Amino acid sequence: MVHVSFEIRKNKDPAGLIRIDNGMIHILGNRTGAAEPGYLAANQEFGDYRFGLEYKWGTQRFAPRQEMKRDNGLPFHLVGPDRVWPTCMEFQIQETDVGDAIGVSGARFS
Image 1: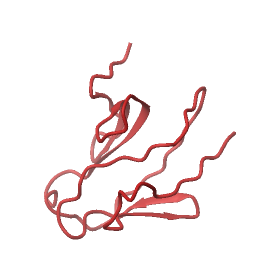
Image 2: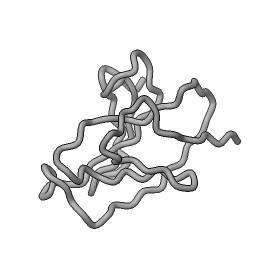
Image 3: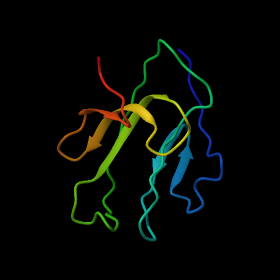
Image 4: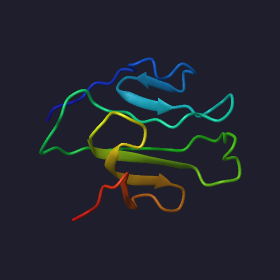
């Protein structure tokens, strides 16, 4: 099994919304207003892999989603240009419907 280490790169987190401690990624929320969408990606390609995820929601809620479901996702099999909303598959991580599989930016299950 190969373990992938993470670091924040490309200066894409000027507000400090992501923290990495002991190999765990903490996404802290948009404390000062609406956060820009983004994603985490590896700098190399992988094949024949397994990934695991544990998550928990914090207690705070942030604008503009204070009254809405908490919403996130785990994108995988990203292809094409490095951009927000890349072509990929995503496992939804949203209150009440975790695990829904979604095709993003034209990706489809076959």
